[in-house]
Image (tube, rainbow, N blue to C red; front, side, top):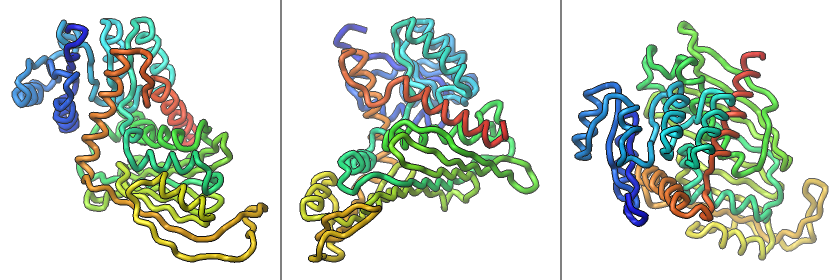
Length: 370
């Protein structure tokens, strides 16, 4: 690699998601797919052939390659600790799939190794690179609708491809739903609402098999908001769905999709507030539901000047897979920009991966009664 040449990326974990990511990354000028690795020889060979790169059957062989500067770890969670440690100690940058690790102790050791090596090890939290997520964040931060009082995440995930022997159900391999999957949303709500703490958590098991397929928790945030999270891996693939609702002092914000694809803002505001929302949510369709010409009205013990109730709705043009690929690509481009220039401000840093694991670990412990 030269200072101006592309960075070589090596993928460990040649599953369907690894292929999806490589396809997205291959469109970046600053990244070159250098090699792939998987202990399953046929999977490594198939993906290597698709991208015309060498196949490795031992992750350490890929990490040792001189043409690999970034290691993308896309393997089950229990393997992340050893792979990220090996890559960091070899002086390689890492992009790690969620979660960073199955415990805070492991995550801290991994990040300490990266810090010692002067390399990066962020988690692929793609939700931070989504225009709908940006709109929600902008509306919250503006406080045009007042403070966020409560939030509700309902994540109804499909378990169609997750047979009874899949590693996902084995907490020793996955960490459980809070850690394997919930970290995405712990990070997202921290992005929207600020630092938080887990107040309570609970888990339910599937009848007959004992698989823990539904977990839920409540978090309190320093901003004063309280949010509930429900994660269920109990749906047919056709009914996989996710929705977010944030209740503010002067209205609601709703987003649909685990990769948020649509946005709805319903607010009681004055003319200035309505114009601010139009600016904060570009591309939205705007409907004035009701006009109001009376005196200031009260809400939550405060007098508010209201002239209209307004609804803004937006569904972006890209489909889910296109938007997902765009987000994955944007995340890696952001990290590469930092590698080239350490003054670049990343959307996702190592701290985000660690903080999400800490919340997930606490939720898992409370759900188990410890």
